[in-house]
Length: 87
Picture 1 (cartoon, rainbow, N blue to C red):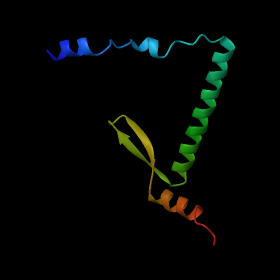
Picture 2 (picture 1 turned 90 degrees about the horizontal axis):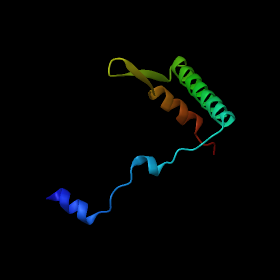
Picture 3 (picture 1 turned 90 degrees about the vertical axis):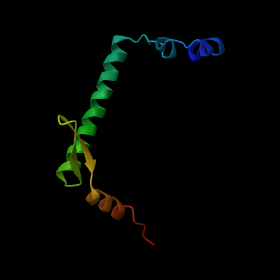
């Protein structure tokens, strides 16, 4: 009954493929995007390693096989010290 009411009252939903149409890109543009994604991933990994090695982060284990780096209280104190205003 509820399904029939929905079908009668609401317009049909568009499939996902029509919400975000596929973009036709050239090989050069695709290579450039991959290069940019590589550098962003490299920068992110270097930042996470530096913050871990400096003692400002720890690993949080997720589902036994994966882990995520999270900042600890030492990082919070460090950031607060940097952001103090000089009056």
